[in-house]
Length: 381
Ligand SMILES: *Cc1c(COP(=O)(O)O)cnc(C)c1O
Image (cartoon, rainbow, N blue to C red; front, side, top):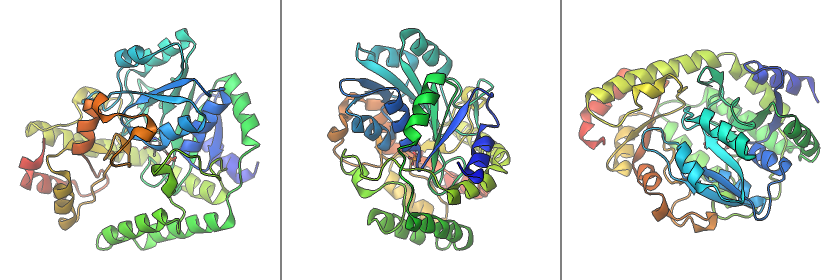
């Protein structure tokens, strides 16, 4: 392994105990696939996961011929609760995926302890949570293994990228073996990423943000730019041919740079979230309740609105960059979710929340956002 990749891995492991090992992948989803495959999850097995996630999560399960079994979320935490997970368990349950949604983990101690007692593999989806903590331990250290993402808009970014952290000897062994099969990214993919780092640093302004965002989404959808999801991943459940891909040095170089100020960025996000909570609570609107703040590293701040499409238009006019996670229980797939074994009627909370949710930006002029919210307060739920 190259020195640069080695340096990046050791940086990522800094918050963890020395038993932990880190494995790098092209994307976070590839890391999840690797964990499941290394653990022997396959045909006839069931994997429990929250009914409010990114479609690439059930995809990784389906690629291995296992079945995703969803559990509805709680409106307060936007995560699946322990009791509901327990009820979803069958003789075929092989693994449970618990999600750190927008930086928040919940009931992880109970869930991971129960999984261990029952001989079920526990996995943390920490794609929103690197650098944060749950009950004073680093996110990703409760379960048997955790996967992370460094895609655009994740806690820190390498454009696209992912990794797995585990302290479990058997999993380490399995993941080491599997790593030998990773495909090397092509030079065009690596070049595309370098150009995007440059574009994001030098060209992005409030004036052109929405046009560039639309252009980026069109180009990645058409496969002309190395993006986070290839068209087919959100259209069907067939595994893309070059899915099992390795992480590259261009990404590692970017990651090392980004990690230097991550703690500071997280503190800033927490501060902003605190301000939003005070504001929303005062107005009697949906907010992240204060009890959850201690364990929340806040990648996004969720609010609920009445007419989301219209709300986005208002925000664009006011030049406020709202986030649109998760616009569907299996983000970003709209419409029929049955190819992913998902029936919207079975998960009323997720279905409703995903039709109302909007994320407030955390790294901006908070006064400007508050003035905007105040003006449209009747739109908030
Ligand atoms: C982004 C995301 C993923 C996938 O991460 P990638 O690096 O894009 O593969 C998985 N789960 C959730 C909840 C996510 O938001």
